[in-house]
Length: 123
Image (cartoon, rainbow, N blue to C red; front, side):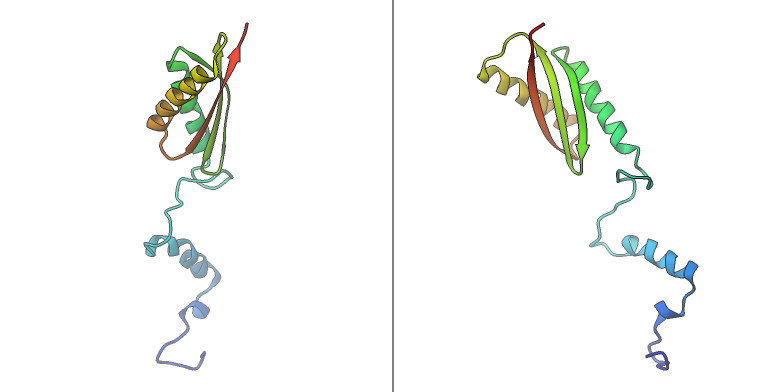
């Protein structure tokens, strides 16, 4: 294969720097790969997006004037939201409150599968 002059093995003829550029550029050339720019949870580019999304969820919760954010966290494509609501809630009212807040969060942050849990704040 190395002696074939009609179809040379281009990947083996490149230096380390050129090989790295090819690997980085593969996802930009193939439309079947997902665009992973500005996503992630580690030190890669765009890692701060999760913090921005959590802040946005907390803003939506605070904007309802009905709920107080207890915890908001992200694991992959799922966002887990736990909030407190004043007073006692029947099961029906609890489900209704979860659905209302879920709709608002989905409108604000549609990229996540959001799980909402409403807890009673009996203080």
